[in-house]
Image (tube, rainbow over all chains, first blue to last red; front, side):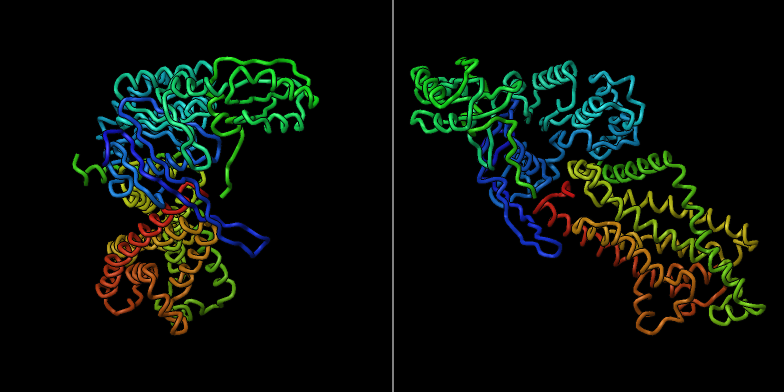
Length: 337
Length: 278
């Protein structure tokens, strides 16, 4: 190991060999680079957010860190253990929630699921029971713990999947979009539990599509896209880095012609387009800050745009994401393999 | 708990978990008892309809026993054990992959071989119990004595034959993991092996090459051992202990080949797309 972080990666690469189907009998092999030399260090005791659209490479990175995949290049250590050479020690030291409700046995009860995974994590029968009871109490699942999982709502299944990640009481939690399908109060409750576990000393790696969640929960975030790490730092550092590169939001009827005109301005760094309530929203990141606002409005209106609203406010993590990737988190960059 | 105790405990937890799950699918258990009886009933009734008055003598001349009813029931019961072994282990891997739980099993420190062994133990308990009930019930229906001959020796042949049989399913489990297609592979295997093990006929009537292929499969020795012990037919090598020692040899070799193949395929799958992709 080369540092003191809970997770360290050095030039981590992953290339998949995919098969391109051409008709009934023909197919060709094509390599897809999912990770392109990722260097990362996640410190002990932090909540670390991993942000990226679908297909950016974050799931591949997480799967390598949890030993599900072997890298094609580079190296990674988790809790001081090498992911390839000491895979079992890595597994012992990580609690994972990776595929949500799909990782559960639906014909077993919630309690039976927890106790079964407790056995697979090498807990003694007494420890399994004790730990399962603690988790059921922590997640307020006493009423449903002895019902089969198939009778649970989606949110209850997600809660149980989160509970499964806690069964081995590992120092590192890897949570892949844990609030997916949870209602607002349940998601907020789960985030509070994550914070509480973090305060008790657990390191948390957290992936999410919800920027506000990352902003409120994470100490540091990494933005990953097309297999590369585009930004890494605390939320406030990333946002203050954008102060100079001001983000402005335009809302109204904006043609692609007007958008192209804005893109061609020399001080414009990134432009992202989305739809909200039937109106087009354009987020423009410039290197000239407020001084370019008049020129932006002029360019848009000259090219036929009808603007309802122009806002230039404190940048959000979403703006940082747009500035780094050129699109919103909702846009899919997945490569189907 | 030391490492071995922890792995054994995880293996038993896998067995127990699957027994609990199947207890919630009671219709499946009933069907497993009915199938071997139906499978045996077809040739028994065909034999009665077409064999004529000296059918038993003709059958005895070819097989060494006049009791064709018990012969068929034993064949179909052992076949149900073999068939279940392939479905419960090889198909199980595919099913876990499709529903998403296979990745969860790759996140834990228990080696997969222990979890698969736990599944094999569950399968053995389930399929031997249902095969025994099917055999007893079939004997009752067709009015033959199920407990003739050397019952203990027959059970010994089943017990020793189960381990290489499950070793074989490890190999096919690995193939399923790699090619991601369970139905066709398991179907071909279960019918191929059932044909070669002589579910309805003695392997002695095969042409030499097919007979040699049949003798490479542990279920062939298991079926013949059980039939010979219960019905007094001849063992392949004349003595029961010689046939049993062949099964012991399979027991030592096949599980190791199965484990080796499984581990190799597992690493290859992790090196490319991972076990979660299906």
